Length: 414
Image (cartoon, rainbow, N blue to C red; front, side, top):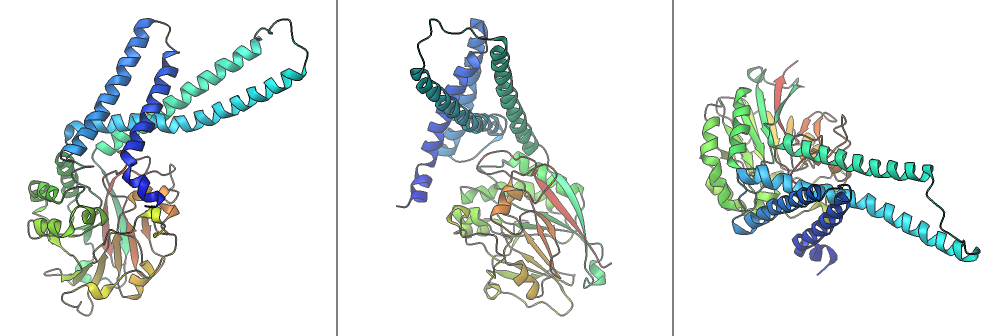
């Protein structure tokens, strides 16, 4: 087994050990800031409570994988609490190593000097420096806690609706003003619960879209979580031109054919390597399946916009002349290829907008290291490409500035 295989096999154990080390270390550091026994007892109780919530999360994962509302309000903050300390432990470790090397060097130098009669007293300057460093550490950790806490809260609230206007000269007159709701990466089950899904669909319907298109990662962990869509999908029953979806890589990890079987025809039209002409409109949808085998840490996805799409897999009626063509694919790859194939709009997700980005710049995100097109609306060719940040957060249960979104794309001829 290779290195990455070992990491994946023991990922949970490694994470638990790292969290435990970080928690013990920081509990000890925080206790030093409290003078009273009562204050230290309260701090210890807080750390224990945070870890009990974290333990509850892992219990649910091993039990049935379903993350309910309790996980939303306990598990997400608990896991984020672990992350605060893991992230803070890295710079703190670097500082300790530097200080240790400095002390080691000072001892070596002191051996060459004649012994002093007494240890020099701490100067006011030394005291100010020590107080400054302690305050800086506290401010840094509190700032990190605020960012992560805000990310958890923002992720748990209703997603924003992001309106975008697409000028398409080839757009048929019948589609002028058509509003497309683009949803992606819901990860229902482990990373989103039914209560949150209801809010997503309620927010979508409040925007009054003409058609809803979903680009994969519908469920997570178990294929039968697809049944949790049944009640929320009733909210989308009044969408004039229906709800259409493709599968993503997490759907393949869970069980793609079972998911497609459970959802197709139950308020959702599945486009698994299929073409479909929307009834009553000069609009053709093509959905390509995601095989779910390529993971970014294997180096398969990289910056090049490669020709990776296989349109010959799609079965169904050919587009009629003059139809507006929309491609649904989970990953934002093959944009140039889709443009050459005559598509006017390409919808994708998968990247979560990096899930973590610098404020104010959607292109400066974590996913930009692996994808040329990582977040937002692109018009580098004749066709438009929309890469949505999606709705759920995976891996670590929060986002930072790459907030969840529902994209509302208004098609205009001019």
